[in-house]
Length: 169
Image 1 (cartoon, rainbow, N blue to C red):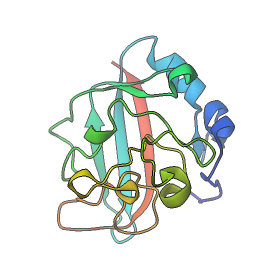
Image 2: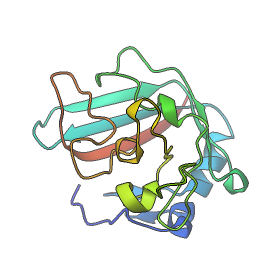
Image 3: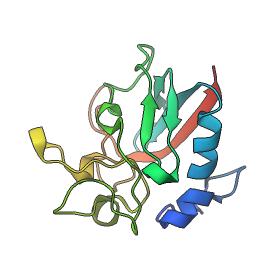
Image 4: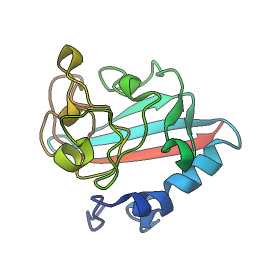
């Protein structure tokens, strides 16, 4: 990872994809929707913190998003795999949530535009203050230790980079 790709992009960029396949990229929500609706795929998200070289991961036995007509909702997220090394299932609140970008506010939070205010990147945000949740802790792209996936074994860590990987079951 050389951090040469800016993930602060608009809806159209996330729709079609951007970046460099051999370095950093977003495949594109259109492609993800097409691929993940052909058969079942699992999802693995790898995290590397700024303070440790050891990667942590979260694994799910299903990953599926809908098409643009339903705002690329995260319609299929399987069970959190017990072999995962992050502290908890932090994707659970994102189930069924639509994708948001800086120019498309789909987070359901009327007081803020999460992608614009807290994320600087596209994500399946949910905006809520119920039980203390808020925009800043729904996206691991946010630039502080309150990034949503902060509950690693041993404490809080800044996340240096994330890789999301899918493969057919």
